[in-house]
Image (cartoon, rainbow, N blue to C red):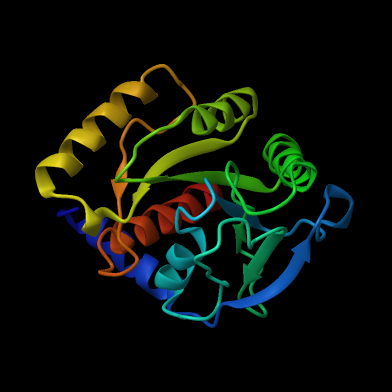
Length: 217
């Protein structure tokens, strides 16, 4: 991002996430979702891909979203917003795929994920997080198929980019973008991020500021 409009979005993104983000709701089922208000942006991904760490890095609050080295700790849809502001909510989704939990419980979380992605009118965008070290897996492609069936725009965000060599990261981005060519609902470009080094956070914040700007006009 280099021109004046991009600089404006970067600043808008900085202000958006400098606010006092707080936990507001946890939903273990579709029936317990909070009333819809404003736009919602959800973060989906395999267990242990770094969703909670990314939310903490975005908001600059290390303990906002619960992080764990144990896959499957986030078992509900977790909502965050700024008190007194209803323009944007963040949603930390349960990780799909491997988790240290009974298969029936994992199946229940997976069903919750797919139902939420298909049936939430206030859901404006989904960021599908992919571990930069491993790339897209079959379980990720199933989620992309669900998103293709919905009316929600989505974008791939590579996490843990600091743990991959620069040349390997560029190859991972290229192969991921090539795979997205078969998914017309997906953003064609991939964002590379690192919660540890804050790489890509500025661009991700700006993308959400742009979403708000577009929906307001």
